[in-house]
Length: 333
Image (cartoon, rainbow, N blue to C red; front, side):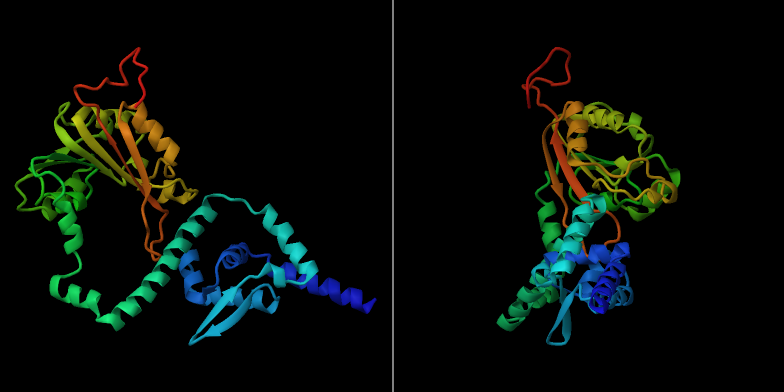
């Protein structure tokens, strides 16, 4: 009888250790990869002290195993090493966990953390081989690669920086292209961008809504909407406007958040849309008559606290191509 009571108490204690949602997230992560406290903290975007406390609880309940590697302690979940009762309990709980946006974001940050780990290892061997990376940065700075790649953009292009904010895109492209038209609905934002880009004679500032962009049809070679689409009332209307202002063969670039569940953003930052799935963005652009849609999830820093980002580009039809938005045209892009 006492043996049965002890066994029930042990299972009860183990179940209690999994009562916190954060610990369930930790369990799923450690079942995939062995991680340090700092790495778990980066993925969950929590203080290390908080993560350490949760790991201690899980370790005391024999849910996680730890080992020392140098000065670091690594944690892991090995289901096959659980006692039969604990194994059955965890498998039953894990089966009920949903594969929602929160888990997708955890996995996205986990990949970034593991990439950093690999980069750290490669950097170590690079230093041993001659400290080339640090020497290169010392000689040439850290931004020359991006600056060099920007020269791939044709110098005669006219670029629309839509929802320009304080002028981040314009600052990068003003030295490269012939002209930039910076558009924002907020006069204070335009003034901040004007101050930031003071002296850049190639930049023109216009106030207006993106549902009715104050740019003539076919006026620009590239339309950029960076972290803007989630603020607008009607994404389809905006994408139609992007298509309208592009010259034949012109391109559009949208940078925005992947679909997420952070409802507080609606109230704290005025977001109308909680990000966009790849399918949603494709439908918006193709529905506006754009083609050759290319969608890419952007790598993120493990320190980034917001949702993941994507970049999506598309092309306006050329003169010798049928416009897929014309009535009766059924050709595929």
